[in-house]
Amino acid sequence: MSGYCRLIALIALTVLAPARLSADQVLLFDDFDGPPLNTAIWGLATWTIGDRTQFGNQPEFAGDENQAYIRLPLDTYNPGAPGQRVLGTEIYSLQNFELSADGIEYLARARLSETQGGLVAAFFTYNQRRSKGRWLSDEIDFEVLSNWPGKLLMTSWDDWGAPGSDYEDGVHHKGAFPTLDGYDWTGWNTYAMRWYPDRVEWWVNEVKVYEQSAPVPDMAQPARASLWAGGTTWPDAFDETLAPVAKADANRRFNWDVDYIMVTRLGDTGGPGPLQPPENLAATADGNTVHLSWSDTTNTGAAHNVYRAWKPKGKAAPDFNQVGSVSAGTFSYSEQVQDGSHLYRVTATDGVAESAPTAEVEVTVGSGGKGKPNR
Ligand SMILES: [Ca+2]
Ligand SMILES: [Ca+2]
Image: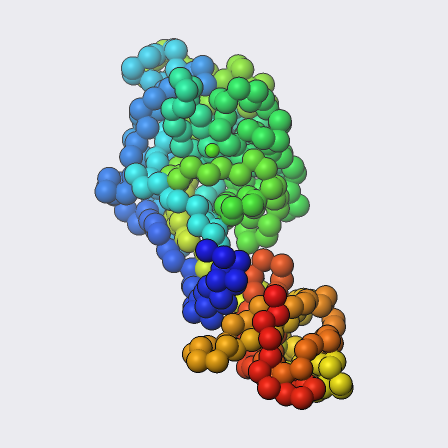
């Protein structure tokens, strides 16, 4: 396709593209309003994590006057490995959610009403794939480490396990562990991870508390929640007093309570609207100089492209070629042209997208007659 035809195609696409005003779309919602766990939505982990937690515990349901919720328990007595591993719980959505242009939000309301150290209570995403003999994982996390009142760990991962992967390398792993004003993980809080093509945001109680532009996962991700015991290889999360016990009557139980989990494909209503055509395009001639002017009240900060047409005899539609552009804040354009009649139109552009064109204006210079191709 010649550049000329490509330009026409671009304009046609611009005109035909529908306004992008999609609303949020809920992809998953579970209010955990009573047993049993909906196994059409959720799986239960059975693997081990760290060096002393076995998953496979059974969630329970509870409620108070305000809400019903699921409890993800951790027992220090594990009948499958007494005195060896505690028995934790992880639920994970069977559905993986694809990243979309306007973002995916993973939202949960949860509490860890415990004061025992060594617990890791997580709301997160995780997926992995096999590549060249390695497992590569993508992940976004909220993690409450019960060793640290008032703090919250937020991390993203991309292709973790690829050659060169290292903690805080900014490519495969990066995170933050701030103390948040007024934050108390022993009470109910909402936790939202917003996953965009160019960044990840972490929101607590509808306030953005952290954001980073790398790493950004790209694999489709399920929603997950878990409670486990940090291992000796993770000193920030480890507490030796949270130890596996050998006898059932010595068991202690801790719970990560989750009121609901919701996954939403975000609409684009939060961003600027699509570019609109400029208005009031007018043309005057002074000798062989054409002066164009227009106004633009809707595209703050946009530049403008100027197009001129030559309409060969017998051709149904004029062929417009871009002849110039002006930077933001300029609403006029002048040029020398050959004798003839010329058609003009103007678009707004932000450097990526381009608006539909204005209505055409015609101006005749010199002795008139048909204009010449402007190439
Ligand atoms: Ca990846
Ligand atoms: Ca609920």
